[in-house]
Length: 224
Image (tube, rainbow, N blue to C red; front, side, top):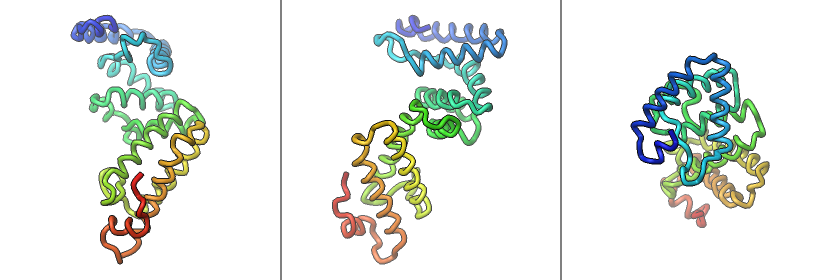
C-alpha cells in the first residue's frame, strides 16, 4: 500500500486496504490484537519508514474495520498504550470525524485520550511529551484574543475555569520538569500563570469594565 500511495495510485491503495482488512478479520481475536499492536508500535512509536515516503498512511478501511475496534477493546481494559495510540491517530486523521464520534464520550479528543493514558500509566514520557505540547497549544489559544480576555475553549473563562487553568498549569509544570524542558517553557508558564491570575482578579471586581484597561493598570508589560 505504501508503494501504491507513493506512486499516486490512491484508489488501488484503498482497495488493497479493504482486502487486507477483510482478510485479517478472519484471524482469531488474540492474533488481531497482536497484529494491531505491532503496527502501532512500528508506525507510531518507531516509524522506520524511509524519509522519502514520509509518515505512512493507515488507510480508512484498516482504521475502521480493524485498528479502531482492536484499540477500543484494549481501551475498555484501561490499556494506556491504546489511549496513547488513539491520541496519535486522532491527530493524524482528524478528518475521520464519524469514526472518532463513535468512541466513548469521555475520550473523543486527542487530549482526553492522553489524559486517560497518563491516568493509567503515570510517568510515561511517550504520554507526557504530547500532553505538554497539546496543552501548550491550548494555552496559546486561550491567550490569542488578548487584551480582550482569556478564553476557555471558545468562550471567555469564568473565575472557576481560571482556577482549573491554574491547576492545569501546575500539572503541566511537573511534566515539563520531568521531561527536562524547563528552559523551553519557563517563560511561557510564568506568562500564562500571571495572565490567568490577572483575568481572574479582573472578573472578581466591578470597577474597571475593560480587561485591556485592567491590564494596563496591573500588568502593563502583558505581551509575551
